[in-house]
Image (cartoon, rainbow, N blue to C red):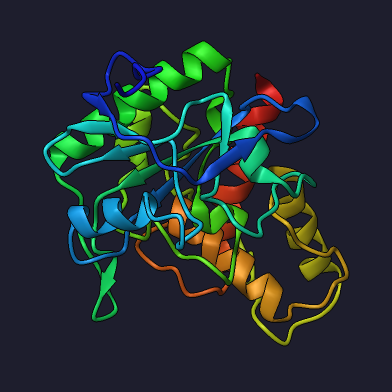
Length: 254
């Protein structure tokens, strides 16, 4: 007999063998959102429950809004991989992993998410976040915690709609400050160092060295995928910088 789901929103518990103890007594303090990136939900579910794959998550949200639980919330699911946020490295030990059934960047273009799926994901995040006292700004994308390595849930994921449904931290892409120049790969100096410092303060894993190299570009791109989805090009233009500062100001004002 399968265990009962932790969330009353889950339709069933389909146990995956891919989990372990949360390390150092950690409890969940963030939710990480992913897309499955496979041709079908059934194929993704098979992989997430295959011991040879060594990958899993706590919840799967289907296109029609159904929710399956695969790993108990008090266990360490294997969904984040090598990742980092606010200096913490073992994100698996401190997170709940949620996979949304979505084929991902098919042919390079991100696939849209159905309304029912987003509403179910938001309800699940509210439930999980409420039970574990997870702060809104710690509902994150896989790409946020692994910039340059992961791009899910991608530019099609409607973070602003999630915020309207009471989940996550959001700021409408901000009006640029006057005469605010863009920073891009190859740039160096104080302007780049301030940008890196602001991204690090928000939580991204980035060196504050004043050199806009490939890692800084990857982090800027990850930030844009979450907060300025219309153009995720890795160039820290005026709108990107203003949006970042707006988010930081909102956290400071809380």
